[in-house]
Image 1: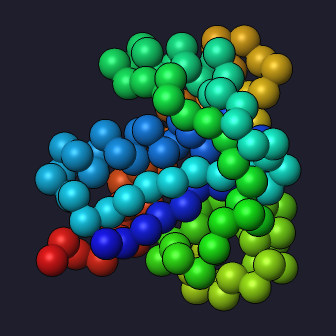
Image 2 (image 1 turned 90 degrees about the vertical axis):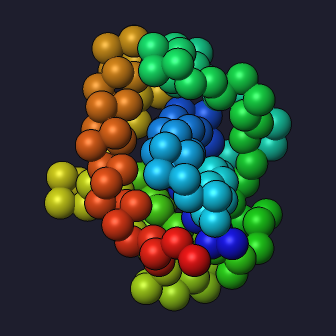
Length: 147
């Protein structure tokens, strides 16, 4: 099983949104060999996904109702083949925790990462979701081929 962790700050907006989108794409490709988790560098434990994230996912017939936030630094980061971060700041924090650079990537690095929609309206969350959807093919291409 290949394990992937997606990371943002609070683990209530961007990372649960990307995790749900990736799971949808993996399921459509029949990839049962990949597990996607999400966490935040500054996350409290147990918070639900934000309302904006839940709405953006509902518009895509997806759900984050079961999501509860977790702090990335409470996880065994060595369990993950890839850790995909929303910004260079998140990647630097994960790297400082001892994760080798070859296991890290910044989502939409060429575009400066993925802006945080926290506190924004549905349009901000929709823009975030569209940017994350656009990033999915490049991220999935980093995975090893199925067994």
